[in-house]
Structure formats: structure tokens, C-alpha cells
Length: 350
Image (cartoon, rainbow, N blue to C red):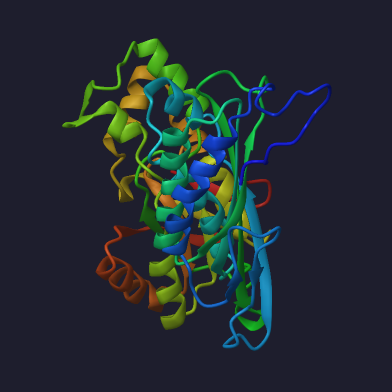
């Protein structure tokens, strides 16, 4: 994945420029078995070539490809400061696969981009190991990527990440929210924490509170709670999609509850979510208290314990809850859809 040695000028080489070619080769050898564990139907050629090849499974009659790309934001800063790199890779996968999932897509394959100033094998292997784990959880193949060593571009110990997911959905089964109507039920699926959004404010609150990674938060070290990997909802929701009709799905990312739910609602519809239907998790209570964050700002910045929102017909709500609970997810009825009064927001948290 790292560029091979080549002459620059006057006898200089990549090594003179600060690129560790041996480290790159060693990393590739550590990545290959991790990627191999994620292989699935459709992979024709993966890591090692100039491009990866994937064949859309023949069980799709009218496949529509759905693509998504994302990063993990300033959560990376805490990973650097706290030397906590093992979960960042799962965050990266989760942000993209959850995004394409909400349109009904099954994630098929994933590619990553890892850039640093100087390659540290253990750190890179830890991050990419997390990416491979995330792909396993999501059932998609890690078929390629780029590891770029760029001396002078990044401070020592720091790196940047981006991820790219491609999935497929039958054209007739695309979920776009167009059929949502008044009376439909809003279901909330629990998050595993702050996921990968709002970390600029999280870091500011940690700094203001003078908090340390090993501080206790509800019986767990702060670092464990804050750096908990983003939940991957792919397999439970794909199973549910095969069982019932889901009218709308919203991945609660940047913009929190109030800005993400409207992305799947028709213009004339409004989701009314009741605050008393779920308990704010300990992390968010701590953030709100330590940062003196207003309720309205909390639901605009954070997921507040809700990682995914489903909208279904009333008669299907119980089936959805039972199916997801049987797969280990916590789900509750959070509200309902109503006709949208003129001039009001599309999502109200009351």
C-alpha cells in the first residue's frame, strides 16, 4: 500500500526524504490476513493490485449501487492524545456503512485511506485492524485502500483517515421516506456512545473539566466511554428489512437528532419525539453538566443515546422492536409522525 522506492535526483532516494519503505512492506504483510477475513461473495481481486474487482451478487435483479464516504472527525485528536487507536477503524467503517444502510443498501465492499508523516507499523496496524473488524461486523469486504507516507505533512504520531463504502439495493426496495405519513411510529435504536460526531465540543468539555482518561464515569474509565466504537447496525437492520416494510431510516450523525431525522421526511410531515421515552446515557449527562450545554444544543450536536431512527407503520412497531431486541439492540418507541404545521420545524424534541 505504501509507495515503493524510486530515485528523486542527484542520487537521493525515498529514504532520504524520510519514507520508510521497509515499514510499508511490513505493514502490507500484516494487513493481508486481516483483509482476508473480510472476504465475501463478489470479490474477484482485492488488496495488492492497482484496483480491486467486485462483482455484484447475481441474486440482485435490478441492483442500484449506493456509495458513501466519511471520516471520524476530531475524535482523531483524542486518539492521538490518549494513544487509543484500536477503535478508530471501526468508527471509520461504521460512519459509511450506516449511511448507505439507511437507503436499504447492503454494504458490499470498503476501501480506506490512511495518511501520515512517518509510518509507525503498530499504530497503522491497530487502526487498520479496527477497519477489518468493522468490515467483518458489517459483512462487507475490505478490498483495497491507500496507505500514504508523506514526510512533513503531518506532525509525528498523527494521521488522517477516510473511508469509502459501496453497497447495493434492489431498485424496488430503496428506502427514501416518500411513503411516510401521519400516524407512523418513530422508533429509536440505542447508540454505543457519542459515535463519531460532536467531538470538537467533547474535547472542549474534557479540557474545561480537567478530566483524565482514567477518570471514573459511571463505573467505567472515561477513555473507554468516550472512545467506544460507533455501533454498526447493518446485519440487524438488513434482517428486519427482509421481515417488514421500513418507511424511513435516519442515521444520527452530525447535526444530532433534530437535523438528521428531517432528511428522510416528506416536506409536509413532522416527527415529534418525546424526551421522556428514553434515559439520557451517563456520557451525555456528564457532557451536559460539565459543559453547561442547553437541551436544544444537546439534541443538535449529539445523538444523545440514539444512533438510528426507524419510521414504520403503527401495526409493525411491535414486530420491529422484537426483531431488533432479539439481535441485541435496545429499541424504544420515541414518538410519532404528524402533519407539519406551517412554519414549524420538521423534528421536534419535546
